[in-house]
Amino acid sequence: MNTVLKSFSPWQLGAPLYMPGNRRDIIEIANGDKYPMLRSMIFCTEDAVSNIDVDSCLRHLGLCLQGFKESSHRYRFIRARNPEILARLLDLPDIEKIDGFVLPKFNESVFHAYFDQLKDTPFKVMPTLETRDVFDSCAMTELRQALSQEEIAEHIISLRIGGNDLMNLLGLRRARSYTLYETPLGHVISQLATIFKPYGFALSAPVFEYLNDTVTLQKEIALDLAHGLIGKTAIHPTQVPLIESAFAVDYEDYEMAHALCEQTAPAVFKMHDAMCEVATHWQWAENILNRQHCYGLNDQVPLKECLEL
Image (cartoon, rainbow, N blue to C red; front, top):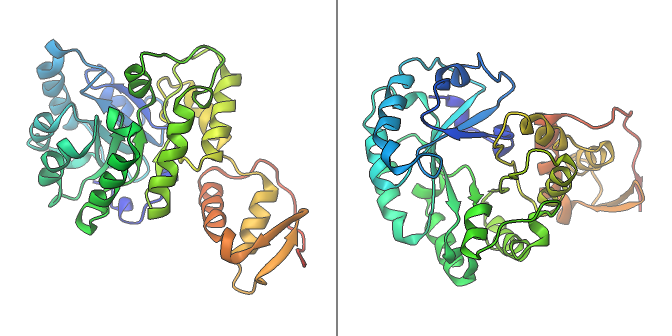
């Protein structure tokens, strides 16, 4: 298992490629022989696998794990179908070769069924918020309090927002050329950000299911970032470079973030015709520097001197 996860930024996951757990080429993908650009991947045993194929999928994953090589820069996750399937996955030989699990349909009703199994393991998890409880701010607040327990929180990399499941609950599917922020989920994503992010939880963005509309995908990623979301799962390999290139940092933002994090920075200063205030912008600055470390800069320009107000 990757010891890198002991000191981990969710930005390191990039655009995880989501795929059925019964694919024939799992070993090649896990080892980087296929799609070497991947930073992370999610092998699914839930919605991407039909009921009749679950047992064969688990057997297939068990065999494939034997062929997984150690990796320090590719992160591997399995999406457990439910707590019972998680128990079967944890019993597989070589399961330590993955980094953790995605927990679907996550809410308080399955909280203990999952974490009673995981609390004494080294595995990291990404619970997915995609049940009707998500529309209830009180339920989400109670879930946040439960997840904030130290022995639970240490396992959590981020919380995933299950956009398609949430839209399904509304009887909707996003129309082509529309971002999720132009649907009823725009309000929901904003609400989740205000409930979870102030308490240290990272949120990752829903998938974009249309493969031939890069313009809307890029527009949605910009809105993901504006809402403070980190990462976006890809459903096709062609989406990975598009998503990750959008995570590159604008140079002016990098300059301001760098200046804000300097120990000698004044409390407030002017830079790029914007007010920079250490007390109120330092978390933004740290996030920008984490993104820049993973994805680089959009424009290489020499650093400029900042002006004190």
